[in-house]
Image 1 (cartoon, one colour):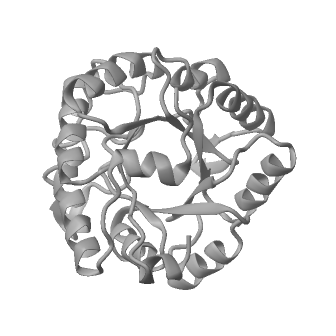
Image 2 (image 1 turned 180 degrees about the vertical axis):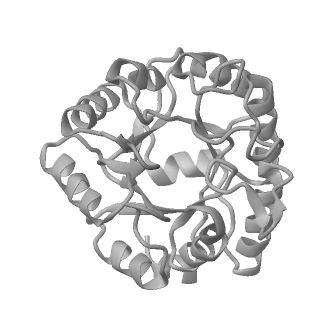
Length: 281
């Protein structure tokens, strides 16, 4: 994908991360946590044009719980028409076996996230994401025909994408989520986005994720550059400075308007499957 994709009117894949595994209703009471809430948010966003829903499991108290992904997947399939389910396999301090629950639901998800290396969270926590974890999850995804979305949190993680390609653990086209934000994430500047896109492997499709106030400007830039975007309340709890987001749909609706103004049509789930070459089961 490139600027030429934008000029030619290539379809935009919109992913919505309805809820994450860190912030809860204490940060924004509109954040969905329970299966029915998450499924309803996915339904609203699918109607607006989202093709993929990125899912985290939470327990009845709102704490992260990968074991509830099956229940959430079932609820999303029940409420939505055709949206692509992308389960997380990430998580700070979560053992590999629990992280793998995201790629062991029945039926299997069509996609799953794959964190590409360590990053710091808060003062005393580091997300490990060792090579053993990455390779084990990548191999299981390849065996099961699950399309990985590689989570590239900084420049060094792009090297790990190349390493997986060299090991034969990835299938083309490679779907790479370039992430911008604070801490050990890539600093959120236009120059860094251009640099990250220029360092993508051949036969790659890129997606843009930016944290908090950087979400709107950098995802808009990603649309113009011919990439795809991730918009939702896992990454941004505010609609604008000082104004909490009312819903995932509110954030998605704004991006849909921008994409329309930029003549970037939205890919349906079926078109996203074709663009990403997601295996047919």
